[in-house]
Length: 255
Image 1 (cartoon, rainbow, N blue to C red):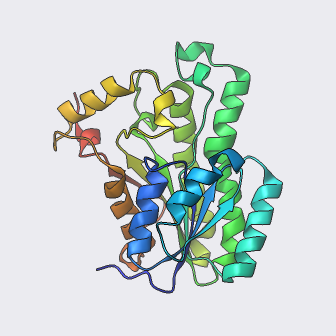
Image 2: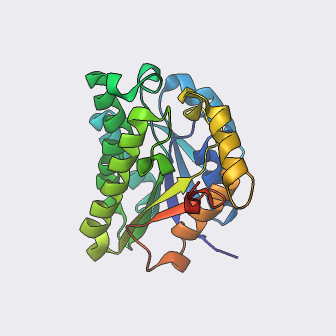
């Protein structure tokens, strides 16, 4: 049994009960961690706070990770409330729907910029905010996908963003290792989250994964949460800069 009692985790990316962030939050809470759960804006506040209320002791915070001032205000509030942080979960990704459909060659400049800002730079920004509060070391994790390294039709600009995200994980791991802060990515199989619904032919993608994966099924968000729990714990104390696949083995297949 993993025990995170006395640890404080900040989780970015809660949108609804299908969110991978929600699966991770449930697992961290069950292990005893104190949770600060972040949602993007006022529009998402009601649903997010309804879920947060299901986790006694957890608190909700609004933070748009594309706005530096909101990130600064959040970490000032976290420092005041908790004093220190131990775990950061970055489950944030976005690209305009028009740039997730059609041909990759038609990716717009603004769509590319938005995808990289929200999906990649935000990891750097929130990690920079959290690092000074990780006075006893810590674990940072983000969410990637296999399209970072192989072509997945319709994933388009988000695939390029995930490739940038995985590279950022390695550079952050190198930067922060001397502070005993570990940085890793979880590459999850496709899940019907709010963000994933913007990808064309999601149902076909999920069917293909289930057909080809060695376990012959898709992953769910609580299984991703289990991997996150491991990365948050001392059991992963020598693991950093890695991409952990939680995809029922799909990534090992050649065809």
